Image (cartoon, rainbow, N blue to C red; front, side):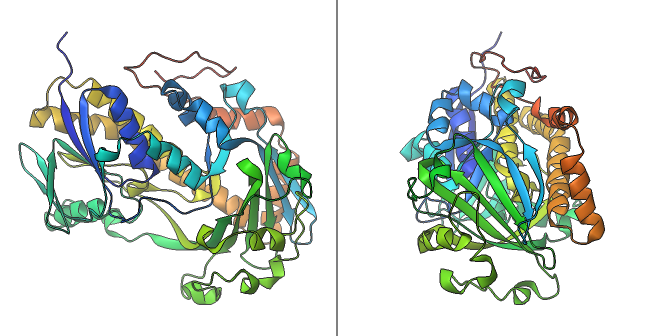
Amino acid sequence: MPEPARVKVVIAGGGIGGLALAIMFEAAKNIDYIILERSTAHKTLGSTIALNACALRMLEQLGMLPDIRKISKPIGGFNLRNDDLSPIGHIDFTFGERQYGYAGFVMSRPALFDLLRSRVPEEKILLQKQVSNVIETPSEVRVVCADGSEYSGDILVGADGAYSTVREIVYKNLSAQGKLPATDSKPMELTHVVVLGVSEPMDPVKYPRLMDHFSTFEMTLFRDKPLSVWLSPIHDNRISWCFGGEIDSASKTEAWGWGNQTDMKSILPEIRNLPTEYGASVGEVLESTSKDMVSSVFLEDKFFETWNTKRIVLLGDSCHKVLPFAGQGSIHAMLDGISLTNLLADLKSTSPKAIEQVLKTHVQKRHQPGRYAVFGSRLFGRFIESKGFAARWVRKILLLVLPQWLVIQIFNRTMRDRPLLSFLPPVKERGVAVSWSN
């Protein structure tokens, strides 16, 4: 058997998807890479991120599961209630470890980012490298940055997020050739605006529920306005929080009046006195959050049909942007990374034909799961956010009547996809629902 060919990859974007891909490349041995990151300070904002068995099996294979456990709490479920505190229902997730071999874990996004960042050699990440142009030739792809520097490789991976510069350049070129599907030329539609953050460590003596083994998400849904409040305890006695909702597409931020405010005392006074299951009011959680841990963001979703050219491939949010309700964005970026890394680790030639074919094979494998992820996040968002009598009754019926065995069967459709890196020793299969991957 011929040895795998050495492949040179340029990764545009040093977020969670790009860093996870780099760690997989490190393990593959035959893949040389650099990350071009546009920011001056390599860090991330955000509230929480959840990882489930679909990604955790691969992270265990890389030896990272113990570190994931250290920065996270296992997810127990979701409690939903109305703004008058009347209960709507509960979604139980405690079956995850028995069923799939891994509990779901929730952690702060910066904590996961820092963990991934620590596994990538410092010299592989180049900061202040804003991509300004991409040039494909038969022999290579060249990336031109705004500072005039150029980097070349066999493949360019656009892992630069929802507003991907790589995607913009590729689509502009395809559009000029009349090859871009009409759906891809339409902009993403902004659907939600949220304010989110992570509190400082809170006193577990005063708030003993913070020491519970499981993190139970608490969601308060307002009945007469497009507003919901989400909270979840995370590692180190902190509480992750988020509030917001759907926006009027005609008025955007004017419908809310939030702007870029970071003054906690003036943001939506009606939520401040809401009690939580953890003992603190929502206001107490907000006041315990430092301003540098608060951000106000717009949310959107879109599935893009075009993911690749002959030497360029998109990854994660740059090709399938999901709403964050179900925590699927980073998980699917990692699943994209597993697929691409496995193919490149087994690549026997870097000829133009071989490179083009491996990208086509990857996209064929990941295209439909990406589409399902966008649809699933949209459906879950509507389930949570929809207003009116009919929507309230649908939630009650599904949460109170649906038997647990049927809930598990629904989860099995996605959670049995737990792929591994094919070139590393496999981890022991665990869980009642055996993985159908690898």
